[in-house]
Image (cartoon, rainbow, N blue to C red):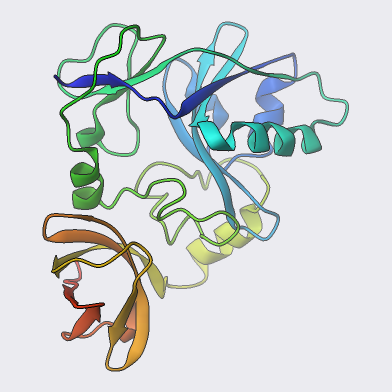
Length: 253
């Protein structure tokens, strides 16, 4: 079985005459790309730090926003802070979110983060449970997950790989946190970031990675002998550990 309903996602419907311009001034990606297509994006703090990530697509006279369920109310509250007098309505719906790999059904959208993540669909019925190992796919392609690798008010989206995952636009106009994000893109080389590492042994999520007696980063999702890690690249060495596990990072060529 290759498709399932995701139990912990919520769809927020966004309507109103100002919906498009309202979102365009807030999110990291370009809302004009959401016409009959799924866009992955984030809402940042004014200091450029990640707050929420979600998917958006056009729908009728507005947009559907696909977000982790525990974050839905907080996201609506945050968006309402910026609404002021804009003609925008935010409504939490009971539309089901589905995902799968393989042959994509009619009405589905390719997951914009990576082709290996298959497709997403809104309104899927049933109670199927997929046999797909989603964590293995995420780890192999270094796709961060909300609340695990993506930490609210701490993560910077470029360090988390949002450019690689088509989650940020550098051609659109201003949005909240844009100045910091653009500066990281154009004026500095990333010195830290999420990467896939080889690992031998097990260690809890959040374990410090040690290198030459110093903290070089943190370990996150693990699948088999690979894991997602947040590393300081200047401290990477051939002898790294996380708890009793051995960790190795080979920089892509």
